[in-house]
Length: 126
Image 1 (tube, rainbow, N blue to C red):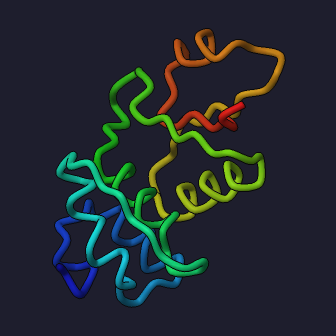
Image 2 (image 1 turned 45 degrees about the horizontal axis):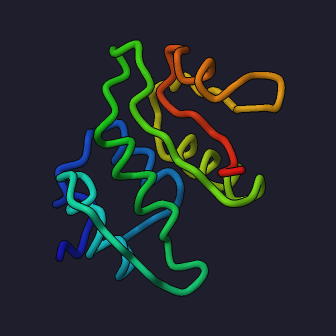
Image 3 (image 1 turned 120 degrees about the vertical axis):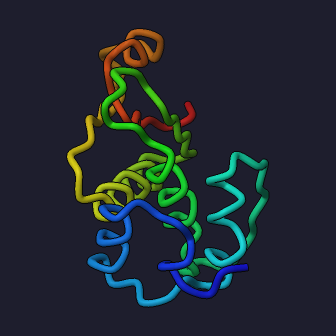
Protein backbone atom coordinates (compact mmCIF):
# COMPACT_ATOMS: atom_id res chain seq x y z
CA UNK A 1 0.00 0.00 0.00
CA UNK A 2 1.40 3.38 -1.06
CA UNK A 3 0.17 6.51 0.70
CA UNK A 4 1.13 9.12 -1.93
CA UNK A 5 1.17 9.38 -5.71
CA UNK A 6 4.85 10.38 -5.85
CA UNK A 7 5.91 6.94 -4.60
CA UNK A 8 3.86 5.00 -7.17
CA UNK A 9 6.44 5.36 -9.93
CA UNK A 10 3.99 7.09 -12.28
CA UNK A 11 5.09 8.81 -15.50
CA UNK A 12 5.85 12.49 -14.97
CA UNK A 13 3.09 13.63 -17.35
CA UNK A 14 0.59 11.39 -15.62
CA UNK A 15 1.66 12.54 -12.17
CA UNK A 16 1.21 16.17 -13.23
CA UNK A 17 -2.25 15.30 -14.54
CA UNK A 18 -3.19 13.60 -11.29
CA UNK A 19 -2.26 16.68 -9.28
CA UNK A 20 -3.82 19.05 -11.83
CA UNK A 21 -7.07 17.10 -11.51
CA UNK A 22 -7.06 18.04 -7.83
CA UNK A 23 -5.88 14.88 -6.12
CA UNK A 24 -3.56 15.52 -3.21
CA UNK A 25 -3.18 11.99 -1.89
CA UNK A 26 -4.59 8.67 -3.04
CA UNK A 27 -7.81 7.38 -1.54
CA UNK A 28 -7.85 4.00 0.20
CA UNK A 29 -8.93 2.21 -3.00
CA UNK A 30 -6.23 4.00 -5.00
CA UNK A 31 -3.55 3.14 -2.43
CA UNK A 32 -4.44 -0.53 -2.66
CA UNK A 33 -5.23 -0.99 -6.36
CA UNK A 34 -3.21 1.30 -8.65
CA UNK A 35 0.14 -0.50 -8.37
CA UNK A 36 -1.29 -4.03 -8.68
CA UNK A 37 -3.25 -2.89 -11.76
CA UNK A 38 -0.12 -1.33 -13.28
CA UNK A 39 1.75 -4.59 -12.65
CA UNK A 40 -0.92 -6.46 -14.62
CA UNK A 41 -2.46 -8.31 -11.71
CA UNK A 42 -6.13 -9.21 -11.76
CA UNK A 43 -7.81 -6.83 -9.33
CA UNK A 44 -11.32 -6.86 -7.92
CA UNK A 45 -11.97 -3.62 -6.08
CA UNK A 46 -15.15 -2.55 -4.37
CA UNK A 47 -15.73 0.80 -2.72
CA UNK A 48 -18.48 3.35 -2.19
CA UNK A 49 -19.43 5.90 -4.81
CA UNK A 50 -17.06 8.87 -4.99
CA UNK A 51 -14.00 7.08 -3.61
CA UNK A 52 -11.91 7.20 -6.78
CA UNK A 53 -12.51 3.81 -8.39
CA UNK A 54 -12.68 5.26 -11.91
CA UNK A 55 -9.47 7.21 -11.39
CA UNK A 56 -7.85 4.07 -10.00
CA UNK A 57 -8.10 2.07 -13.17
CA UNK A 58 -7.76 5.15 -15.43
CA UNK A 59 -4.41 5.99 -13.83
CA UNK A 60 -3.27 2.38 -14.15
CA UNK A 61 -4.26 2.23 -17.82
CA UNK A 62 -2.61 5.56 -18.60
CA UNK A 63 0.58 4.46 -16.85
CA UNK A 64 0.79 1.46 -19.17
CA UNK A 65 -0.02 3.32 -22.42
CA UNK A 66 2.72 3.84 -24.97
CA UNK A 67 1.47 6.71 -27.14
CA UNK A 68 4.07 5.89 -29.82
CA UNK A 69 2.33 2.59 -30.63
CA UNK A 70 -0.29 2.76 -33.34
CA UNK A 71 -2.64 0.15 -31.89
CA UNK A 72 -5.43 -0.07 -29.38
CA UNK A 73 -3.90 -0.65 -25.96
CA UNK A 74 -6.88 -0.35 -23.64
CA UNK A 75 -10.52 -1.29 -23.83
CA UNK A 76 -12.87 -0.20 -21.08
CA UNK A 77 -16.42 -1.49 -21.21
CA UNK A 78 -19.08 0.36 -19.26
CA UNK A 79 -22.70 -0.70 -18.77
CA UNK A 80 -24.10 2.79 -19.52
CA UNK A 81 -23.23 5.68 -21.81
CA UNK A 82 -22.96 7.97 -18.77
CA UNK A 83 -20.37 5.78 -17.07
CA UNK A 84 -18.43 5.36 -20.31
CA UNK A 85 -18.32 9.16 -20.64
CA UNK A 86 -17.18 9.51 -17.01
CA UNK A 87 -14.35 7.05 -17.59
CA UNK A 88 -13.24 8.94 -20.69
CA UNK A 89 -13.44 12.30 -18.93
CA UNK A 90 -11.37 11.10 -15.98
CA UNK A 91 -8.77 9.54 -18.27
CA UNK A 92 -8.41 12.67 -20.41
CA UNK A 93 -8.17 14.95 -17.38
CA UNK A 94 -5.37 12.87 -15.87
CA UNK A 95 -3.10 12.78 -18.89
CA UNK A 96 -1.16 15.75 -20.23
CA UNK A 97 -0.02 14.11 -23.50
CA UNK A 98 -2.52 13.93 -26.36
CA UNK A 99 -4.43 10.66 -26.60
CA UNK A 100 -6.12 9.20 -29.66
CA UNK A 101 -9.66 8.41 -28.57
CA UNK A 102 -12.40 6.69 -30.52
CA UNK A 103 -15.95 6.90 -29.25
CA UNK A 104 -17.93 3.96 -30.59
CA UNK A 105 -21.28 4.67 -32.14
CA UNK A 106 -23.87 2.51 -33.82
CA UNK A 107 -22.55 3.63 -37.22
CA UNK A 108 -19.36 1.56 -36.96
CA UNK A 109 -18.74 -1.98 -35.86
CA UNK A 110 -16.62 -2.75 -32.80
CA UNK A 111 -14.19 -4.80 -34.88
CA UNK A 112 -13.72 -1.97 -37.38
CA UNK A 113 -13.30 0.52 -34.55
CA UNK A 114 -10.55 -1.49 -32.87
CA UNK A 115 -8.48 -1.53 -36.06
CA UNK A 116 -8.01 2.25 -35.80
CA UNK A 117 -4.80 3.51 -34.20
CA UNK A 118 -6.36 4.63 -30.92
CA UNK A 119 -5.11 4.67 -27.35
CA UNK A 120 -8.55 4.56 -25.74
CA UNK A 121 -11.76 3.14 -27.12
CA UNK A 122 -14.96 4.22 -25.39
CA UNK A 123 -18.13 2.21 -25.74
CA UNK A 124 -20.96 0.79 -23.72
CA UNK A 125 -21.07 -2.97 -23.23
CA UNK A 126 -24.29 -3.39 -25.21
